Length: 283
Image 1 (tube, helix red, strand yellow):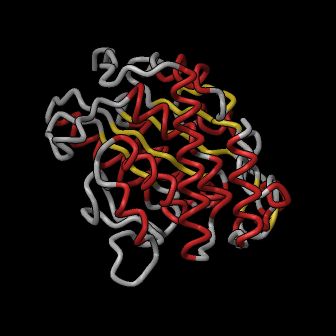
Image 2: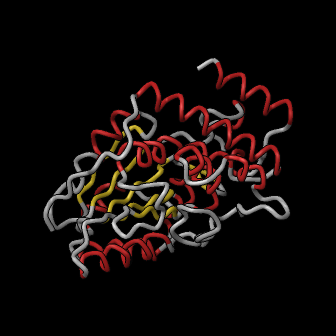
């Protein structure tokens, strides 16, 4: 496959992107507080990954969400779907008022993303380890049909405990799926503790390379760094690309839960929600 030149479908400065990330975090906190739902920390850690993709990198048109030539995003860490919902609404896929029904009766937005629940949701997900196999299948279909669209997949590092992730990684490398790009939200925490203590993944980058992937590592909260790396995909013709994004769980949220397992489960109280909003406004 010839190197795919990313088509910038939205022009946005770094300052505008940072402001957008703050707005997305506000929506995440509001959804968590209103529904008293879990998984706030992981939603906050992947904000820049999503904003850079949707506002700088991916070839998409919110007015034509199912256009055949669109890039696809497989959001595999679907328990953090409120981050995806917030970004899709900011990008114009659907009205922000829909966010008010997140995880509430008669709302459209479930805790885990459901395909076609709102425009822009490519897959139904939730069981960790299923996203990359689906993304690899989609990328192979694109290859067979000689299409130029690309498939992006966002995984969590804890999700990489799953054997199905590595089966799909082996499959993608074997089939030379250079139209497949994985971003790993590597915040170092999962449901029961630090990832390195639950099941050590290191040497993480070397594992991907051994499976035939071209690998890059980056600060997952640095918009320009992420953009520069993603503008160069595929990193090598004939190989899938993986970006290991080092992030902080709960960043921009309730201070006592930042980089803590507690951000996985504890929704903000009213006082914590107000305090977190004030902190975001001061950034």
